[in-house]
Every structure is written in structure tokens, then in C-alpha cells.
Length: 379
Image 1 (cartoon, rainbow, N blue to C red):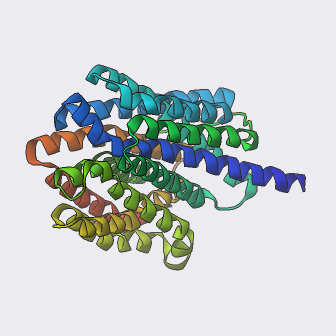
Image 2 (image 1 turned 180 degrees about the vertical axis):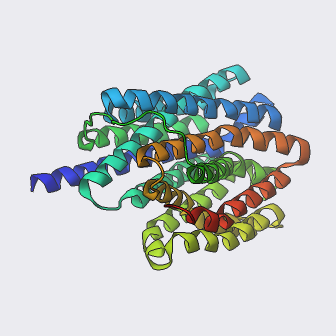
Image 3 (image 1 turned 135 degrees about the vertical axis):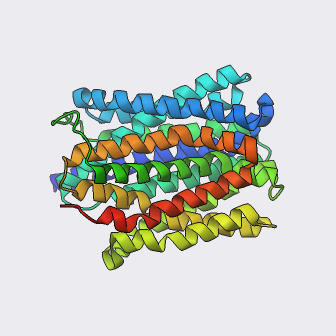
């Protein structure tokens, strides 16, 4: 009975941590067009500002791996969640590019910290219970993304302003992370080698993970701006695309375990190619908002189970320690987040945002069509 209660508390606490991280990241997405207008910057400068968020995330990821070994994941999850809640309103009151860059850097530090720590905690919980839980946790992250983008978009539509919108989201994140605290296991860090030369197959998975995270990050950071600039939606409603994408991601992940059990990892990836390609074509060529929304829905469904499959392949391979392989995948994913928003900004500045989104569709097709290569030679 005690073990069951502890397990339930740990499951709830970990779910809340994933939820908080999703809310924090997605609440920023509808605010990107407002930040661009407020500071009067072009796409290239906006890309550099978003690079500050990615830089903070990567630095925090590297530090978190060290801090987690000493203190465990519990205090890092709490600090990261509270950091997101504190910094989110700062993003909408920053009145110069320098101040916004500094706020985005601190926001990225908080996001990177909680992201790594909660995944470590999830792996430990999955190991202790002997149950597959990772897809469900990532579904909570997607639900958090929907909640964050939907809340901010709704408040902006009601003319309540960005400050009020972010304060409400911050309050929600604070309540959730404080509620998660009692259920999180203290943990004692991790053991094993800190570095092993990655095998070529693990490097392939890492590259695919980097591309996937790049595309997901770009969708969150640039989708609202694409819809607004194409005059498909008003500025206050720009976050609807991110909302649809997040809903589709959550739905796909909630059913992901059942799909993989029926058709396998390889087929799951390959069958995601068609909705991804169709979705991106709809987004970049849609004459009306409804078609664009259908595109975001298809993209979210197609991409939803890519990261869980990649993580599972990294954990199941026998060519190097699973923990180190997962660390390589995480590092590559954050590298994608680091270069993605800035890279899209530069491409958009030179060739336009529609071409940049077309490039994202081509990259994701490479990921899904590489499934056969990735699934071979795992001895």
C-alpha cells in the first residue's frame, strides 16, 4: 500500500514537471510577434534573440548533468519550474533587444534545467516501476504546450494584454511545480562513465533527434509569425497554429505506445512521412486559415512519436551504455533547439518564412525515411 502510494505520487509529480515545462515553452510562442513589433526588429535580429534562449538551454543542460549527479533531480526540477514562472513575464516587459536577450537566456537556463532533470527522473521512475511510462510523460509535455499557447492566445484575444496573460501562466506553473515537489524522489545521482565515444548508429540517432527538435522548436517559435505575416490570422490569434500542433502532438503521443506495439518502430516513423509532408505543404501554400490549421494538425500527428521512438532505440541499442547514449541524444536535441530558431530566422530574412517552413518539411522527411537505416545493425 505504501509502495503504491509512493508510486502514484511519483507518477503525478513527474507528470506535473513535464506539464510545467510544456506550459512555459508554449506560452512564449504567441508572444513572439508581439516582441518583434514592440522592439521593431527584423527576422535576422529576432533569430539572434531566440538564439539566446537556445544558448541558455544548452549551458544549463551541461551544468544539470553535473548538478544532478550531486544533488539529484528533485531540487533542479523545482528550481527550473520556478525559474520559468519568474522569467516568463519578464519576456513581455523587456523594452530593448539586450534586455530581451538576457531574459530569454535566463528563461532558457530554466527550461534546459527542468527538461534534463525531469527526463532523468522519468527514466529512474520507469526503471523502478518496470513499466513503460515515457510516452505518457511526453504527452503531458504536449498537453502543457497546448495549455500555455491556448491560455495566452485566449487572453490576448480578450484584449487582456501580454502581462496579464503571462502572470496567469506563471501562477499556474508555480502551483503545479509546488504540487509536484512532494511526489518527486530525492534521488542520489547517477553512476557510470561521463564520456564514451559514440557509436556511428547512435550518432545517426542523435542527428535525427537534432533535426526533430529543430523542427519542433521552429514550429513553436515561428508558426504564429508565419500565420500573421501571411494575413491568415490576426496578431492576437497567431498562437492558434501552435495550439493545433500541440493538440495533435499530445493525441499522437497518448496513443503512441499502442501504435508502436501494433506496427513497430520502423513503420511508425515511415508512416509519419505522408502527414508531415502534406501538412507542411498545406501550411506554406494555404490560401485560408482553415487549410493551414489542417496542416498543423497533420504535422503534429506525423511528428508526435518520432522522439519517443528515437529515445527507445538509443536505450535498446547494445553498442554503448544506454545512459550515455541517451545523454548524446539529449545533447543533440538541444543543439537542434539552439541552431533551429536562429537558422530559420536567417533563412526567412534571405528567402522568406514560407521557404523556411518548406525546408523544415524536407528535413523531417529525411528523419522518417531514415528509419530503415537506423533500425539496422543494432548488434
